Image (tube, rainbow, N blue to C red; front, side, top):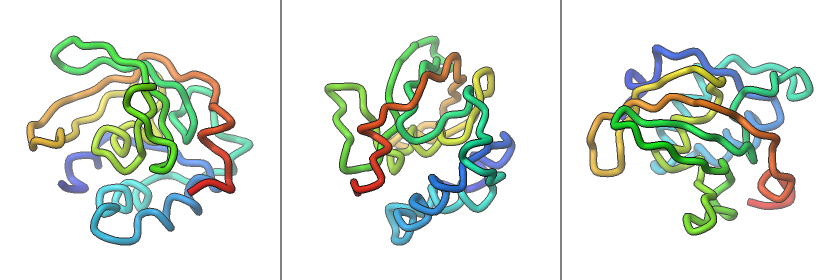
Length: 135
């Protein structure tokens, strides 16, 4: 997978998330995350627009098939699919990172199918999910 799957949509990442996520991206499970971080525009976290998907953000998005989901983007140690908390290391978590409301991106599902998602709304980050002591 493949940086080219993501490279058409510009993304923004706050510097605090960038630093912590780069540490996660080391190793085979983080290849896609590393590619996304490498192409992201990094800005001071305090300057990150409120509609940008960041760690801990609640995100509502729709897929090409028309399904709508609402999830919280979290570090792997806070992932809990039953609570709608998805890890940034999952394909969909990596795809969501750095997008703004209204943006779409192509991504590959865990079973290798190509899909497209569009961010509809980005909510305020969840403090538990962004706890810097975690992970």
